[in-house]
Length: 430
Ligand code: BJ8
Image (cartoon, rainbow, N blue to C red):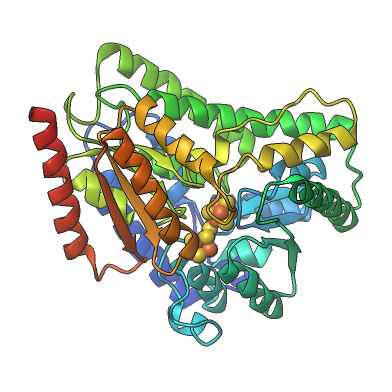
């Protein structure tokens, strides 16, 4: 941390003692998992810095933004359009949490068998450990999975700031109309919150900005197709995690800078692992920061994760917004159309996801798929069946993992992943 932020954290209302403990655990984990990696690109220095300041400098920036009159909008899902938040001069922050924190407090409100992501966002708030939640003026939920839907009711009781967008479960004509209305309703809500009008000019600006971020992430993803991969899966995952709360303009510039370096690495054949080593695609539930567990196990066992078929991954940036709109209403049409290209398992049917798994395996030259579902995440646990079927038709080995944020199953996961990777290597040799 570049300076002492204790006073700021106190004024935000954090539990200072517990917060100190959290930062120290996080710092140690980062050192052990990230800083011990070999042959990292120099461009990762920026992202290391962002992590070291995750509750410092970025929070200070948000406090300053609030003091200048900006509103802070927290979100939990990639269906919530960042373009609209930026069009009212808002700050958009992803609030999903990826660490087992405040579980006991959370379990006073939700059953034990609730997915770790939900328990963590409740837990972080209840334990007084999330400065981002404290700084939000509006928290946007969405009717995706049942767990989230019901948790938002509770979260609203606790924070009094939750607004819910109604997402359909099917993408037919009625569903599309409903979602288009929700986009309009959300725009009205943001205008009322900020007092700023959403104009065509503002939408053009914000769409360009968010698309530039998506393009930078697409570029990073494309570079991972090289053999050897120029960047580890751990580092790429981190960049995707950071994309949800960093300043979007700075993030895009830094990601592009890193990609310039990765391009040079690809040209010179420099990678993070030997050429021809095992390559894995991860597919499934999102991995919110600081959930690095599965990547650390896979890469610690000698393979490279070359892609994430996930919301903290390609699902978030696969499709660009069509910027060819000439009215605010047309921009809303395009925003709703784009978000409905996202292939979340909460939808039925969700065959696009299977096509996307297939496309990613081929493009990224992955030798195996590891399907990752958070325990009790019914949509992704159920869809693992179809994901396996599509992998089978491609002749690509598939491993199904269900886990949470705890470290209790580390030994078991290492054994299962190790055996899977051995099998991939044996196939490659044959
Ligand atoms: S678009 S994946 S970000 S809903 S892990 S809370 S699904 S039980 S996070 Fe998601 Fe939007 Fe879909 Fe993406 Fe429920 Fe599963 Fe928990 Fe989840």
